[in-house]
Length: 323
Image 1: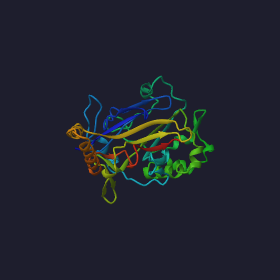
Image 2: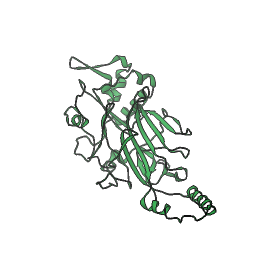
Image 3: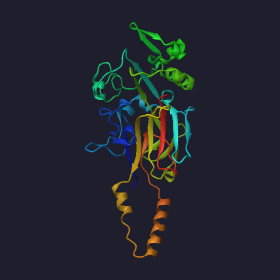
Image 4: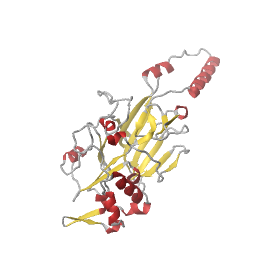
């Protein structure tokens, strides 16, 4: 029987908890000195593990509406990677490569003793979801608020960013394709990103999707050509992590961790062999176990959030920088 998919998250890789997948009404809260926020993980046909006391949900309302059902995928040219390192990694600028990005800028910093207190504030934007009764079901594409400063109660275009008014208008366009294209183009240049100042008064909401890895079946999927490639023969059980971090300081803001856990039937199967009685038998048993491990192929995992593995390592990191 195939391993079981486990999704966990936390402020860093050392402090992870299992996430309620496809439960937007229970977003996962991260509250640390570096980051306060909440996240939802959605996976089509999810057949993985749920937190203790909860029932796993196979799908989300998100995928039943046009926004979630009609996603397109592309190769991001800004990605840097080393997939052959001892610890393979891929790294991309967050605001340039997310599927959707929405920015909200308050006139003054948010102040609260906890993340939950922040979320209750009327000044804090609601969590977009078709399941929570929120007016906004999905992330709205609009990065333009980050390019304005508030003076005397009026929004003024910040000339220090070097952006022109025409580009800002495109970032605010009601046509999502125009707005997202303008964002990817402008934010794709490092010199531009270095001029943009994100403050404690800003709330950034992003939607990150990945349709290239089916984590329920461990297959590489090319959506446009409907091609599927089995990854199980390259997988040695290593996890895949998505990390949001600062490229300059290396500070980690949050981590989403994907891992395959052996099912109880797998463990019983692997532990059912008879103990050898002699050294010769022990050596033979080790050889047989190695042969079985090298040739064994299992299945089970899916679509929406995660990418990349390499048989050389224990783990793979996919990072998004906030630079």
